[in-house]
Image (cartoon, rainbow, N blue to C red):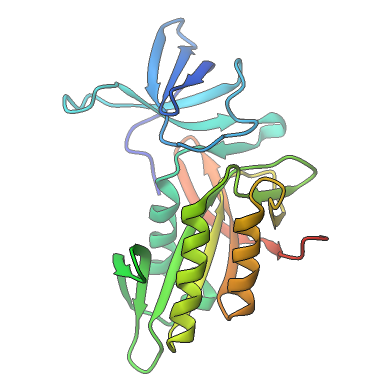
Length: 238
């Protein structure tokens, strides 16, 4: 997934109102950028962090910049745009880069299912069960090389777990894909202290037959692509 135009670097002044960020560009210009992430963004919204913005000249947009990346220590990166994982996963599905899902050629996005939800992708292939694929954006890291989800309470996420499990009970296949938008993580676990209800719902869905995958990402100022699988730990004692 390539960015549409070259990104520009700056320093974060503050992130506020969930969807806005003040940034001082390396040129000295102070700008307001759209923050495409309603989450807590723990550790990724501290003043002074080097950030990368995507400029645009679209007259329909209120802001000329969109926040895309945080530059981390040790040459690492984090992607903060919560809308990008679906694009990255779609490209990986189309290219057959997710081995567990490579047998499917039919890919439909945003399909209604369950009680009141839309699944990110519905995969179909003659002779195979319909597969419901939900994608979750991950960019929380608190200790060592652990990626964690969620970074805030998500009742919607817990409902998704229940509905994915219901699809398995109906004879279909359900797969949850966590996409880690960080390059400094090698393991994944649930942040049960942040949202115990979500962690419980996720473990119950897994016990009910929902398959759980996690992949890292290759991140640079030119774009974001799916990387290798990351080991998943669902046990609360992990």
